[in-house]
Length: 308
Length: 236
Image 1 (tube, helix red, strand yellow):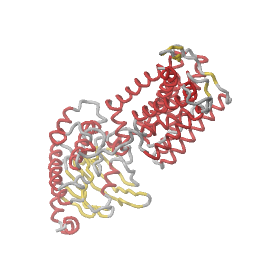
Image 2: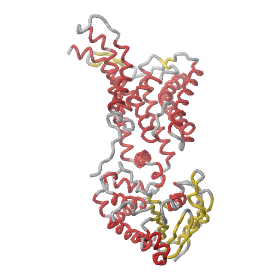
Image 3: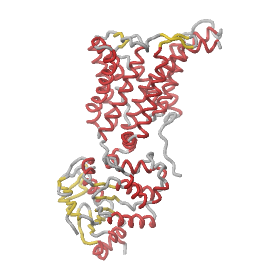
Image 4: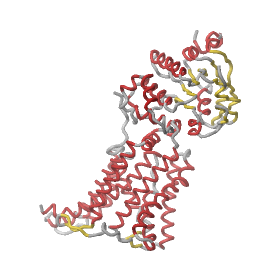
């Protein structure tokens, strides 16, 4: 029971961070599913969403700022696709990837220009910033809200993909552009919708993430972006449930590693802290290497359909 | 026969400097079954693909239903009532059979029940397998599904790229008898085939394509009895 008490705070923040990674990871995995493109700018869209919230909330009340920031983020994702990826539709995949890296740096540099490189304090969103106590561990409400909201959004998304006309078109386009266009599906619209959904989820993710984070800097999107990317690869890139499960596993493991020193000293396994928390980030990337070496398709990667 | 529904004038298609189609002209009349036969690389597929806008012709004109559709977007052309059953079927493997049919009617906003019923009555096997993923069907079933999917858009002109490719002879016969069935519904059919015998038996009009040009034309029966055609394509 004592172990549980000590572990709980890390577990809680792990679940919470995992949910936030999940919301970003879905954007990576959906875009990959349709365009076979790793959208390196996605983490920076997440950062820009945070930054926009900082600026919009200075002049607008939160009930205006939240929907407005979501809208602007969606618009940003849409414009990035139209300007930087669509003209390269027939180009080799590598060109699109390089364009994505370019967009990533462009967004970071724009943010640097706008903020002057200073840390911008994220506005406090009431209610989700409230402190609550769960089984004796104190945490912010956002810790509890994140997994629930993530779950809801992902279920909605999976319903959309499996049971609506546009979802059917997305699944068709993900498989075969040419035949989809023969069905009268407007490929570019489907791709735009994919980016819109991805950016929408990233905007929500940024609001949850920055509530627990000191502030927004131009490079703040890089780490969560990379981890969400690893989560998507871990889960099997292209698979939405895979990305979500991968994100939760990474979030939880990473936070337990952060607490490893405290846990081990409490139980007398080690005498003094070893600074193990430093390895929290390294864990994610070791995981990436292990996955790529032993199971490159990830947990739920694309499988070939068998004949019966 | 009634009026011309599709008119191709001096169509030229080239890929990176290589001319696949070198000035092809022909007409398709409403309600007809027309076939283009020819060897591999004769330019048959390129002709169909440029009609439906998957490749942009280098020169020439494609007029459908009195309207110049040359170089338009595929989605626009499909909307006007042309559809293509692509070579190799190209079923969506992880959509169910029913979803494959529904996606074929993607542009339509009306009810699909009647059309689905019609496709199932043409191909009863599809009804049995309606909840199965498209990728799990056999080659013949996939061809049926590809034809059914194309019919779901209620096309005026149905084009087929090698419908008999890789199928057992008995299934090929089924497919061709269904092509006749579809024509009775007033759908005009343009099909290209290497299986010239079957195609010419079914077709009202046939054209022989050789290295990007039409060399022989006539009714299906005329071509079947043409000595040059017999020697080159019928193996008799």
